[in-house]
Length: 179
Image 1 (cartoon, one colour):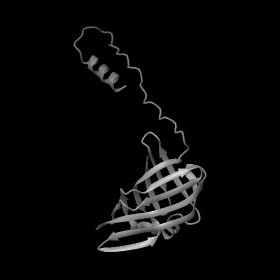
Image 2: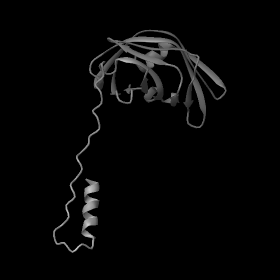
Image 3: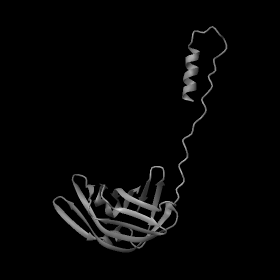
């Protein structure tokens, strides 16, 4: 449309003696290809947690990037796991730190992506945060209770084309990248 408008404006400024207006046909509309439908419903699949942000009761976690925490959603069961070998870099406002997640949180999920119900079944291992020269650890059970407990409703948005999903929990937001 913009090309056609520009062509009409240029045609109106030409020195042609013809009294008939010049009409430039508009090129056919092209549309972006529709995103390929996912073979799995949102959020089913294997992901890497690439970003996280603490909210509410977990706001002290700040924002984090990187690490090797995986999130697997498979037929109503989710698993968050890592061997702790790669830390998540944390931005804690005036300082930075790192978080190591070692172990797994396993739970159940059901419902539609905009109101996905998550429930923790078990958690093994620990999570440690090193910042300000201090290291603090807590069990993954304690983290699971803070983030999910015995039931929270999350909003999940999946973008199959970009291979990403965002999970918004009451106390955290997780950005996931498909593996």
